[in-house]
Length: 201
Image (cartoon, rainbow, N blue to C red; front, side, top):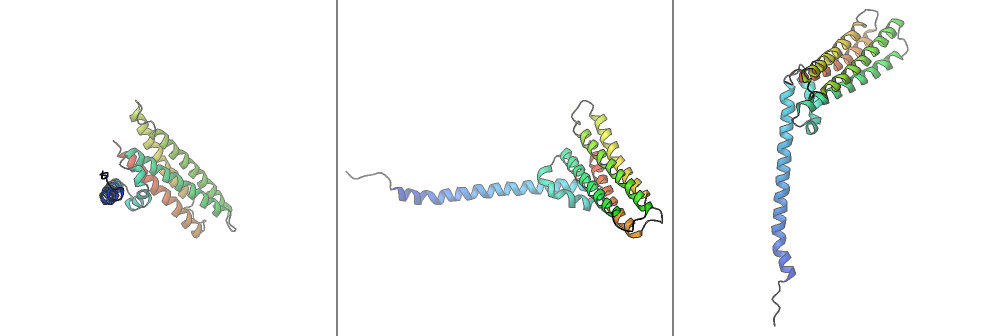
């Protein structure tokens, strides 16, 4: 009796193109969905950056985190605060190195020491802001939100306090320019984070 069972090779030849098409369609659809999500996340960051005082800096610092922020305003605030903390720490390190260079006067050294103290306070306040943000789901949400805004505002005051110490003409213009640039960066990052917090609700 003739064997009527299908030839495995013929079956594979028939099914392979179909399976390949299905696989390619699935991959294409997944990539399409991923691209749509990426566009959505980027657009969220862009729209939120429009409310800040420094939108260009906002986009530059936050777009790389779009996939983790997604469309979550709380995550956006937290990420902006983390970036500001890094900025304040980097500024403190840079200013500390300036204080170790030869030719720094006693007045400049004292101003640098005070500025580093101001930046340390700024980092503390940024962390406290993050802590308040963690409690926005608590019954005292409004109280925590006010705390977050207060702490974030204090960061900008600390940055200005640092700059006040270098307003005297006794300070080397090169030193003043470098420190002003570093502090300005911290102020801008903190201002953007504060803008997000202010527009949460």
